Every structure is written in structure tokens, then in C-alpha cells.
Length: 56
Image (cartoon, rainbow, N blue to C red):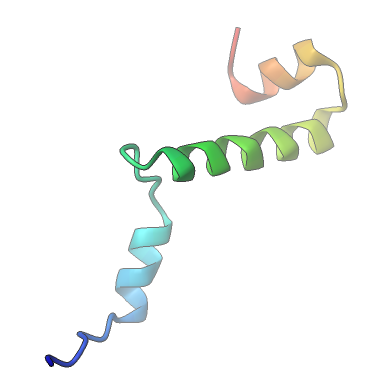
């Protein structure tokens, strides 16, 4: 069996900096996370949250 290739910390940082658009679970998780942050920042008003997320 081949030894697993060790990933550098630089590679990990680059990987975590992007959202994999083809991975539904990752897109969903990131969306939920961003909505929660927006709600904490601007309150529970739907208009304010949408404005905070850049939606119209």
C-alpha cells in the first residue's frame, strides 16, 4: 500500500479559503453559516438580513 501524501499547511489554507461549488453540502453549509452571521450582525429583520447579504 502506498504511503499517503502529506499536505502542507499552505495547501490546507488555500483549500479552506474557497467553497467547492460542485459540493452541495459545502455550499449549503456555507450559506447557512453566512446567514447566521448576518442575522447576528443586523438583527432578525428579513430586509436588513437580505441587504447585509447583498441580496435584493
